[in-house]
Amino acid sequence: MNRNHFLLSCSCLLFSLLSCSNQGNAGKQPLSATAADATNLSVVVPAFNADSAYRYVDEQVAFGPRVPNTPAHKACGNYLADRLKAFGAVVTNQYIDLPAYDGTLLKARNIIGSFNPEQKKRIALFAHWDSRPWADADPDPKKQYTPVAGANDGASGVGILLEIARLLGAQPATLGVDLILLDAEDYGAHQDYQGAHKEEYWGMGAQYWARNPHRPGYNARFGILLDMVGGFDARFHYEGYSREYASSINRKVWRMAKQLNHADRFVDRNGGFVTDDHLFVNRYAGIPTIDIIPYSDGGEFFAHWHTVKDDMSAIDKQTLQAVGETVTAVVYNEK
Image (cartoon, rainbow, N blue to C red; front, side, top):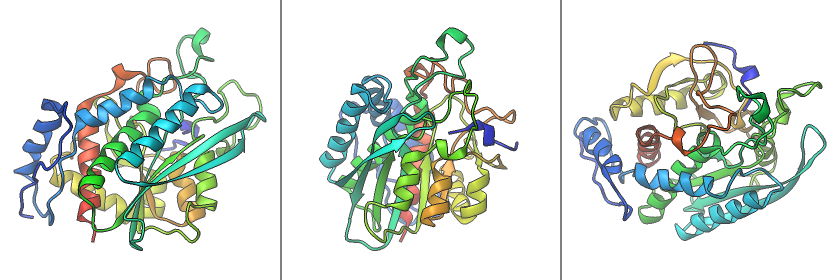
């Protein structure tokens, strides 16, 4: 995503039905802390496991930078599709050739995992799975053409969606849910590029999917995009295009976060406008979609954005828990 467009600063218990074999305190305690305090929840929601999500992030990063046209990208795409299938999703692959800003033809792949595919009422959850080809925001000029590991910027959102996929495979939600992993989000122009820096250079997989959804006539009640949702001390404000296109979905998600005692992460405050995948989903597909994305008042995303330090050391299980638990509760409470 491009920060150049970042303009401004029920009463019931949640039961832990599912867990990974390696569940630890990070997966247990946030749920038990919020369960007793959660009010107005109307259904039993399976327990989101931050340890599991963290492992899925780590497994993506282990392939190396997921830059289109590289072996790591191809291998990770196969891994993601296989994971979704193993969890019971109907998987659709969109293999597409996308011309980048510099003329490079990107062999891209959008990966869609659909749960309860015959249900007409649907929710769309998005994340991009590619990583930045260059660390062009790195403070060391010698590293500004080094590919980025993309642990937070890309893999964190996908890791959360894979954990949600695991839950959906074991306990279906009432509505159909599509987990849409978008490619070629982060191949926008290098900061040194002397030509025009256009918004359409970003989110190319999203632009394709929004114009050519995996099912003809596809629609969803709403969408939620997860981007950079694993950083330490992350704070999420109401992103500008999310307010413009889907303000009611913002309120729905932030209200749920407050009920789950995550109001310290989901701050009731307006943020700036970010050119990200959700912009194209809203603009071309007409699905009201919000972006859960962090920023600072100074217009920064997170400390290691587009640098070589966006690796596993940048990932915080508590942030994964807050975001994953909130989105899971939203999905399972939708009727």
